[in-house]
Length: 314
Image (cartoon, rainbow, N blue to C red; front, side, top):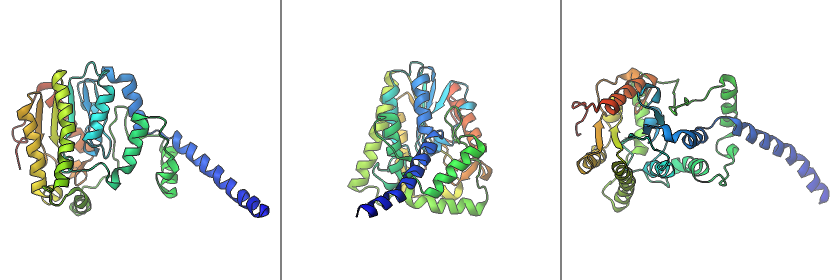
């Protein structure tokens, strides 16, 4: 028995050493959650325009094209609850904040926080924004293949996918009709919620609305403007979404503008200025589209520019 245990340990020790080494290497790779927390810890007092939200702003709004001192604190999968928590954590330090920008996307108000696809985000948010004692084992977050690919990519390029102001650059994008259609068909099923009037979906809807309402109310009290916007999408996306779900979302955004004079809503969903070249996939912008959207949103922030053609209800 002792000999069996000894042999087992001889077999496991090298694996343990490899696992620990891999974990250390993965932790040395820059992490957008860690980076954004450290940036906000150091520079939140300087921020004039704060970008929150999900991948639509993480990839879609580049602070480098803004006139004001702007930072992108969005993440993929970041729902209103986490926008609220980030504001709660740093609101005392945001002394120069003048504007908050938030996306109101197709799925924004109907996503629930215990959904499977948000599990990784929730753990990383808790670790980097709430408590450093909550330990994440990096090697368990992805497959061995993806971990090795991540290590190889970083050490080969020595670059991060996000810039110093928090925007995520996507290098490989698609802009042909077939692929944009395919990406819409892959995405829409898990962003569309059946029977949005059900008790469960309405509960989720009003939970999300309550977090947005808090952000807008706090902003009004502190003389901060809030810009809500529905980001551009390609026709293969917006022509196939559930119109009732989109209408409910847009109507709530418009309702905010009626109740709060510090709140503006702009609907860019089917804006014809965004062409195939501007999209990474059917609902996310490429770097070309991000520059276009960023310059436009900067004009809204700086000059209270209001595009009446873009601001319409479906």
